[in-house]
Amino acid sequence: MTSTLYIFGAGGHSQVVGDIAVLSKRYTQICYFDDLKAMGQALLGGTVTGTIKDGVQRISDAQGNSQDTHQAFVALGNNEQRRKVTEQLMRHQVSIATLIHPGAIVATSVSLGAGTLVVAGAVINPNTRVGEGCIINTNASVDHDCAIADFVHIAPASAIAGGVTIEQESFLGIGCRVIPGVHICKQATVGAGAVVIRDVSTNSTVVGVPANEI
Image 1 (cartoon, rainbow, N blue to C red):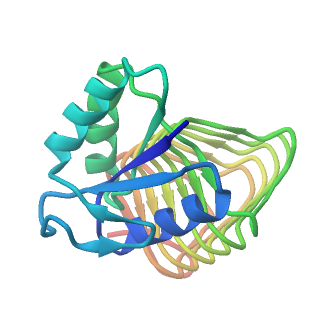
Image 2: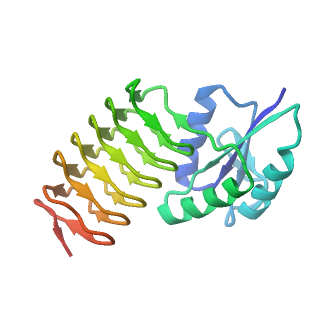
């Protein structure tokens, strides 16, 4: 039986996804779909086989083939773009994979939503909830009892203390720090290296040590 992973996106982030998919040994075939890459371009574990629209149609059509299994993963770093493509796939009742690098540490009481990626060196501690389509990137640390909503990106080497809430589509830049109990509202941006010691409002950008809105 063939098990195929359809990866949507063929940029640098997709290569991280492809590597984790190969390491998982769950898939016999990987197909990439991207609007900017040339057809047939070789990528890790597979090739570009069409546009994102092509991929949505192909995996939708493949759902009826009971002999094979098909899953999708949206490998787009931009939170809004990742959400839109994921929503397209979900409307077609496509199975969305969740991928965890074998070098990550995820506590047994953690819940991970469909389409979430946990990259090498990341640590997620007990009783944390991570929504759909999130990226917990390289060496990021998320401590106990955090609530991370859908399509959040926590960039490499970020450290999130216990009891933090992060709402939808927020982006936390590389190497940032968030103290316990902080609430980061939806679509907020935390700059690289920032230290967040107070709540962050919706659609705002905070930078610096301590972090202030700009």
